Length: 171
Image (tube, rainbow, N blue to C red):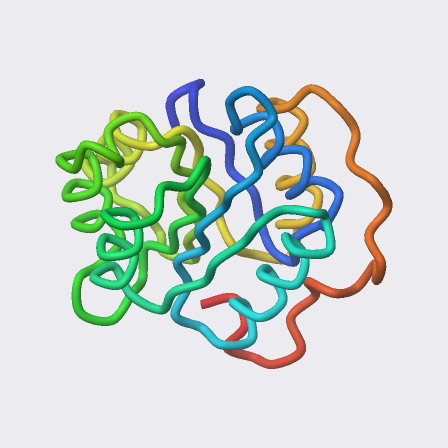
């Protein structure tokens, strides 16, 4: 079982839930979000959702790119996949927390990986939330956004924008 500070969210991601989680995570109404996701389908859908929600969003495909982005362009929230090529999400998270700009930025981990207890402990200690990719991710993401922001999200432009369209979209 996950610690109480962690919420499990499964795919497909609900746009309204994601927006609420993002808003709750952002200090003082800031709206800059970095999405770290290697799967092109998932990255495009999540990025579009964030932009449609009125957020300034950047997307990168790797942990190395995320660290480079954070070092030069501060953000207010990071959505971080764990299964990344090269440096995985856990190592990215560890290194992020060593950077001056990364010490306090909220990080919500996105993964389809079945986490070990050790991995759950690392995520619990270093991240602000956990979303498990799966069939109910939209509903769970809505709850996560509610937890962080406590306000409803505007209706998305396309209700199905985050529903995976291929077999590898949940990666």
